Image 1 (tube, rainbow, N blue to C red):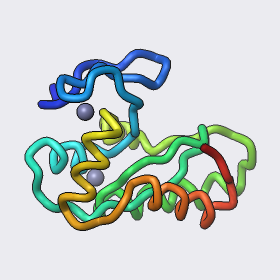
Image 2: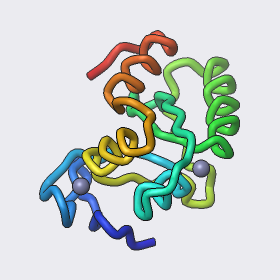
Image 3: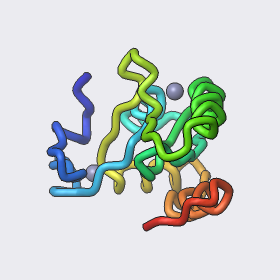
Length: 125
Ligand SMILES: [Zn+2]
Ligand SMILES: [Zn+2]
């Protein structure tokens, strides 16, 4: 799906954003992506995947992600992500996401990521 703000990313975790130029990618589900695109509210939940990347998930995808995390505890060290086989997991410009979180009254993305890492016990950047 083509996003309004973002073009295809490259494998280095950067994306060429039409608004912000070359920007870091943050992973999110398509529902969060839709909300960022048209500015509507969607409750955002942050979880850390098995590649140690933060993922922003909506209230529908969040329980599935929690189940994946719970399952992964039985296979420590194995990478996992929140792509639920239906292209649920996508991603886009981190600054677009930051601005959308602020505009929808959900605070700072960086704070939510720190909180998720603390909860998860896997500190990282
Ligand atoms: Zn952007
Ligand atoms: Zn979702």
